[in-house]
Length: 281
Ligand SMILES: NC(=O)c1ccc[n+]([C@@H]2O[C@H](COP(=O)([O-])OP(=O)(O)OC[C@H]3O[C@@H](n4cnc5c(N)ncnc54)[C@H](OP(=O)(O)O)[C@@H]3O)[C@@H](O)[C@H]2O)c1
Image (cartoon, rainbow, N blue to C red; front, top):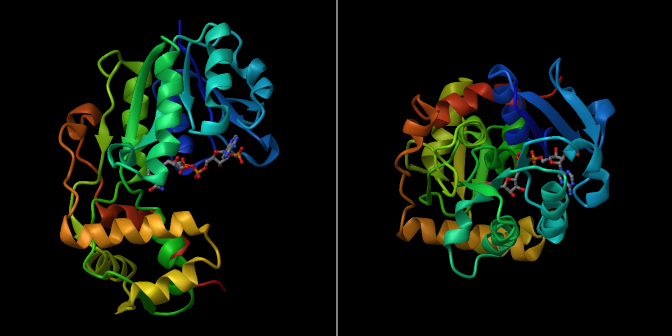
């Protein structure tokens, strides 16, 4: 009989692809969302209204399920994990972050709290430690590229190993369906080291546009970013970029073996998201 798997964060960039991968593999999928009427999930998926901020709201989705893909919300993680255990769920795959490996990282603490709650439960677990999602370029530069051809950014030479959300999801699906990843915490990066200047060049090439980069001082970038992001997050992002100029992050090994296919390149990610860069009107 098909396995029943609960997917939280099911409308997210990664969660949506986890749902798709599980459906394609023939699993019975229960997708949790706070807004079922807007979820737009595929046929055959049972959609449950639920909110990770209110763990009790997840009881119906959990009842009788075997496995859980957990979107990380540290504030309630212990209660959610307890509920899952009581409901008979035996495996939890956590959407985590490679930032857990960086000492003193704000994002690392956030994700570690969820990993610890799951590990302490005694259930089977896998922590899918995603490196920086390529989708982050949309909030960094999406607006600039939709409205013009000039991107202003600090640290043009900061190198990242941006990962396609489909590859993070692919590892989560493998961890939910097979047994090989139980008790492991794979880091999932993209297949190539790219500086921010190279990322912008690739975006222009794929979109067929001449997009230029002007490097701005970090101080100026910070003043702009704090207008729409919490200060600790701004400082974290700028700190990561500063470090990435001096010590570029490395491409993780072993991910292609888990996926059984090549990792998706940044150019493929841009092509998949071309509409997100399109000028309005
Ligand atoms: N960005 C990065 O570079 C990076 C790197 C490593 C790891 N990560 C992790 O990946 C996460 C983002 O994953 P993603 O891109 O798949 O998600 P996403 O696109 O940000 O969407 C997450 C979905 O989860 C649901 N959600 C959010 N908060 C919730 C809550 N408190 N309770 C219940 N549902 C909630 C929302 O769905 P509904 O509105 O439908 O309920 C939302 O659509 C980050 O938050 C971070 O933890 C990110």
